[in-house]
Length: 412
Image 1 (spheres, rainbow, N blue to C red):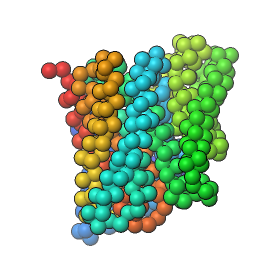
Image 2: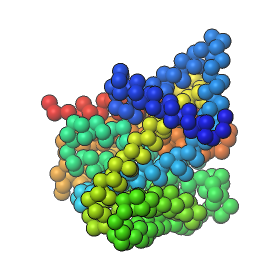
Image 3: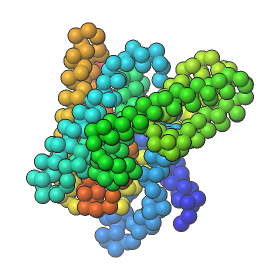
């Protein structure tokens, strides 16, 4: 099966599952697609146990897809840009301290808290996972992915400030978490920077290069494309310019060893605010919004179908599953602490939405980026165990948290 056939199969499955969900199940789209593809995967596994070898055909399909590359080098740039386009800089500025704290200090603290705690917990299960790999697990499980929950928040009429906190944090903490993950890989000696001597100075240098470089490149590229958009009035060309910015800029950021996710978020905020206000006609603005909304929907559909199907190629040792189940309350507990402490401090000078800590804790969904980063780990027993543990946490997060977070903000 070649790449075109694989892509055709995934699009067809996404379309079919979307129809089934919309027509019969009526769950939020991303959650519904995940549930259907997960049920299909489990059914194929069961049929395989009964001697019906359909599972093998699905595995052939999945082997053609490098999930890590498909998400981290393809889908992620477009998904982050589409999300950033609709975040108001004015609203973000009002929530800047909350977003900045949760996306930076919160992610860093979560990485080390989950990493050290999991090192001891994994030991109780007899899993010999080195501390550095536990810290890698902490970094990959810390970023939140509220794609599924944002639709629920809007449907329930959640306060704009709450939407901005969740969207802003997720857009930036994805980039920060990837930077931390890269730094950890370098310390472990298995990343692209593993040939350098590891020291506090080199770690700080790498972090600043990735994070600050991503912000700077995003500002420069976003400004240049914004000027180009302002000089013409052709929505076809302007949409092509944004496509070039997203995919070309993201690829160049990777070549320059700076953070692609941070770059594309900053560029998206510029285009979605200054570009939308000063550089686009009403017609262009409408077409651009429709185009990126459609891209966002299609890529999300394919992504969540892939997440559900990935269960077919995991080695589900029950010890790994049990460890994953224990990680669920641990990651939620750490999330509660890393959200609760800064918010409690800020409450001394700022008013927050009722139940904000509980909503941010339960609404901080883990998603595809966590699985993609786990797939980046070098082959070995640690990778297999951490991949299954990550998968268990992500599936619980998307399905259980995603379907119940609305109850926390639903009016009494």
